[in-house]
Structures are given as C-alpha cells and as structure tokens.
Length: 471
Image (cartoon, rainbow, N blue to C red):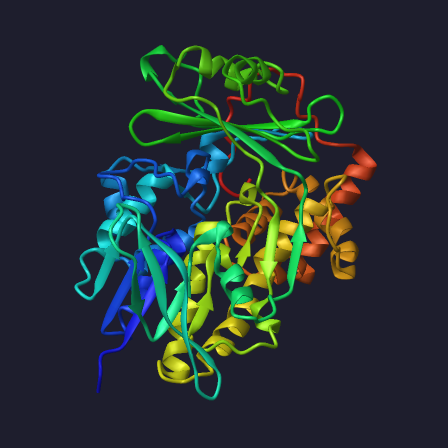
C-alpha cells in the first residue's frame, strides 16, 4: 500500500492540533505556513490577533494537554500563571464591583505566542510531521473521477525559490479568517458555501507593558482587572491580563462602532476615562513595551460547509477557516482544538480512504460549532446596531440570558454554572435546567422586592474582603 499524506494549510492553533490528530492516521503530515516561525515565544505577522489578550478556556487547556502531553507542565515552567478569576481579578460589572469569591475553575494566563510556541515545540517531536515555513499556498491541484477531488496544494516559497506542488490524500484548511480557499473553490467553477455573518462592530486596542511588582501598593491584591462598559457614558470595556515574564497586556474594547483609540497618547488618556482609574493607575507605574495594536475585523462568520451541496473530495476546513467567532469571547483556540478532535473521531469512524469523510466531518463540526456560535452571537445581538440575521430562538432566550448575567453576582451557583458553560465544560443547555432557572427566578424576584445588591459602583477601587467558596 502506498503512503498516505495529509497537508495542513496554516500553522494556526487549529492547524497544529489538526496535524497532531492526522499524525495518527497518515504516514506523513505536512504543515505549510507563509510565516517564518520565530525562535521562542514571539509574534509573527500571520497572527495579528495574537497581540491582544487571549483566554485559554478550561476545556481547551484540558484538551491541549491530552493532545500534547506535557503542555500544561511546560506552560507553567515557562511562566504561565494559574489564576482564579473570582479571587484574583478585580471585576467591575454593570452593577458595581464583584465580591471576591474563589471560583471552582482556574485559568491559565499566558500570551498567545507562548501557547502556540509550546504546542508547536511538542508537535515537532512527532516524527511523521513536517512544518514547512515561508511557503504560501496559492491553489488546489485536482483530479476528476467520479467526483472532483483535491489532490495537492500549489505553493510558492517566499524566498524566491521555484514554485512546487505538494501532493496529499487530505487537504485541511486551517488558515484562519483570511483563508483563500473559498476563492480557490470559485476558481474551480464551484459555488461557495453559504455564509452567515453577525457583526456587532467590535474593535480592540491593546498595548503591552513591563510590570514592577515592587512599585505596587501593598493593598493592590488583584492580578488582573476586568471593567465592563455601560450604555450611558462609558462605552469602552477595559481589561488587564497578566502574562509571563512580569508583563501585562492592557486592552480596551468598544462595541457598536465605539472603537478605542489607536494612538499611544490617546490610548493612555482613554484608560483614565474608564469607569474606574484602576487600569490607568497600573499603567502609570509600568513601562510600555509596544505601540498600540488595533483590530476591528471581529465579526462572527460561519461558512456552512455542512450545508454545501457541492462535493469536493479530499478537502476539509476547520477552526476559523470554517467558523470564526468574535474573539472578545475567547472561544477560538478551544474551538480549534475541539474541531481537531472531531476530525479524529470521524477518521476513526469512516476511515482515511472513505470519500464521505469531508461530509461526515463537516456535519459533526457544525453540530459542535452551533453551541459557541449561539453564545457569541447571542451576546452580540444584545448590543445595539449588531448586523446579521437573528434566529427566533435567540430572541426568545435573550431575556433569560440577560437576567442570568445580571443576577450571577447575587447567587454564586448561577455564576459557577455560567463559568462552566463559558469554559465549554458544560453545553449551553445546562443553563436552562429547571433547578438553575428556579434560582434565577428567585434571585430576580429578590431584586424586584429588595432592589439591587448594594455594591458601591462609585468606589474607585475594588473591595478587599474575600468571600468563602460557595458563600
């Protein structure tokens, strides 16, 4: 039997995870990337979003450690921080400062580049995986028998060397939001898959800083900061995420076209106009490490390959190439890893030689993607001016979800369940179990009778007291 080869377009997190899975089924796996991989945890041009804050959800953390044994240990050894959001973050919600109360779920905080470099290093240890850098994929190689089949990738080296074609039995598009595969599909004379776009006109602006722990006042207990926007007067959210190497990333986000400034002086001035001066005070004793990076390409976009009537054998798309979420909700890396694991399930079920593999995978991936898509777009549709088709179910569930987020600080059990769903440890249906709905109704009724809990929003700094777990 001849060797079977798989090609992955894009060394994204989704692409690296896909390559890991494919290495179990194919004799050779090749990952093509237009960038040169940096030596160490550094930025690369093909991942501009990496300069902003990233959240590795608990489910993603667990699955990455299963895919790449030793991932979590290596991350901690290289400075990733284990943080309990409820205990370690000062969070200013619409109603005021959250009480300090430890969560059951802890989070691994690190830069995107450290996460990616750790995964890439572990992938390189697999003997039948090759990572080829500075090569741009420019089109499909195809043959037609019973159906049109992708048999390879046309590639142009970026160092001026001769173009070449790399043959493969399976081609995986993991090139992200900017994928060119839809254009290649059109060039073959095939119709594009249907797309759904939901755009809340969200924008980021981020800057990196060196921190100096010895300069911080002793009562500054927080390791990170989260400031929600409010409709009247404070349209920008602000977050401060600690990362490895005594550094922090400060990001402001605006929705509904209220974009944060990208100039350095304007960025610093805008921090002082957030609902609390807490982030501005941190920045004042820190050292800027970068310019201000901006990103406004944050719409949710779902290419419905699962509904695609056209047959194109030997081709699949996963991660952001198939379904990209508003990155403000932190679902991207975890969703990419889970899509790769679904590919493993489909390869096990139908086999590498089955022409139905793409269809089976696209259907399985769509069933999974529907859950994070519903959470991300449901949250975006609560923002005035969001564009896109809103399903009836979203309109019906929105009042419940709105109440749930409002009363999560009143009842720790509601907050914990939300955290489990957001971290993909439970499906969204877990938010609508009768026992939880009863708690939400009780908490909301208590607010109607007694008013909102008296958490002093006007206080410039967060509370010092710590509530016990489950209080």
